[in-house]
Image (cartoon, rainbow, N blue to C red; front, side):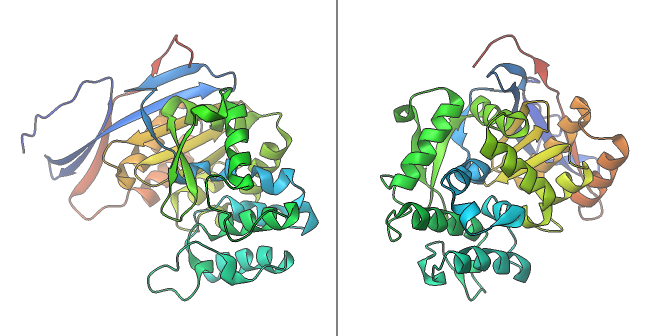
Length: 321
């Protein structure tokens, strides 16, 4: 590979170096948006369209609260946190998901997320908390249980309506597709993802405020002790919300300020999105340097002789989304 390989500097670039030589390159897009829908800073294509994947989960949890289902079963902050999670399938996580179903008087067999390889129950699937909250909401609203993942189901229609309201656009403009767990996910512009997370971290929306509080109260349930989202929320001392998605999606929010950050790695690399997230947090000064260094040491551990290097920065924008 040509070790002088470069892309236009408006994109963020992550280089994997073996010794002093470049072995792989990841091209990354990122945008910062406020809760009025304004693009504040960007690198690459702010309006790049891609699927939000699991970063949608905090917003898919809204009907769980607004329907009264969470209150009815006394889900508490832990139950709300697991409903937003992409967890590691540990006993802790599976038990919390089971509690949502048990309190709702719903059998585990109603879960339609897959049983992971080397697992024995759908409770261990990383999306099981979202599915359990879906089912609890359907039970409370007397909606069909068996078809809760279909796009024309009342629950999925309500989720689309809520997201469209937050984005201030007609629901029919949103494009949905099946995610790996079977639930719908949405095709959005990167700037729209940042806009959603600006709402999550600094919204007057009652349910989103409760969801963000629950995620911060139980970061271990949102991902897992050794996972990026959990580490970031714990190390920020309640200042940051973090929710990643597959294929190089990472979304964050600065709590109390109504500002969201969305990241997309073109080739879907997890290591690249995490490296870029930490790189941009340093630029934005959203976390103390000491905590950031700890996260870099814990998160970006590579084999001896390998290192990740991020080039580029966010640039101020004038356009609105």
